[in-house]
Picture 1 (cartoon, one colour):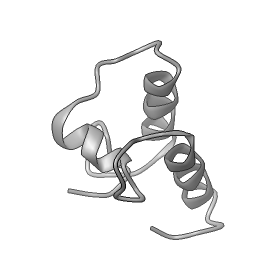
Picture 2: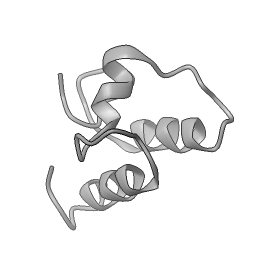
Picture 3: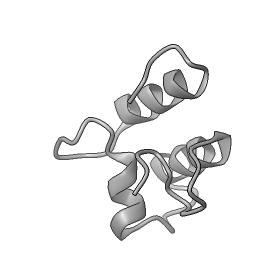
Amino acid sequence: MLLGDNNGDGKFNAIDLLKLARYLADIDKNLENEFLYACNVYKDEEINLLDLLKMARVLIELENF
């Protein structure tokens, strides 16, 4: 499993970031199991805006996972 890849296409990209943003905003709760686990980039007890921010920073190549 690729960290951040929450749609299972084998890549981490803006679609994954959007999917997590929609999940956190309660717009789309269709994110579960290993795909939800892939979003927990800090591997703590919850998925939150910090995970979203980290994914955004990785996407624009300011940080790495």
